[in-house]
Image 1 (cartoon, rainbow, N blue to C red):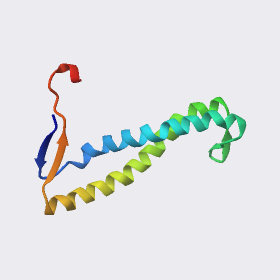
Image 2: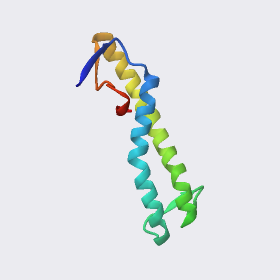
Image 3: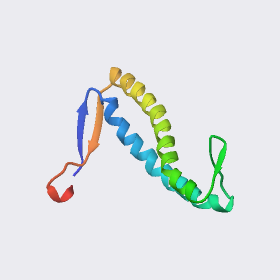
Length: 106
């Protein structure tokens, strides 16, 4: 059963983790897949203008994923923070959610 919570404002700090998880879940699989294809020169990974191939690329892919998700998170988080503050000045923020009914939902 869906419920609605009315609030004055959402803290920007709580938004950051959701934005990061979303970006990381989207970009990490593609970056890891590109690292697997770097062995055949289909995709090139570079670090300080040095190409990475094979295991070097595969092991550095999580770092690239975290860095890319982090940069995009900071930009999106800043925009969301400003947008929510402006929206909250003129309207009430409503959040739709599904409440936890028992411990089986966790």
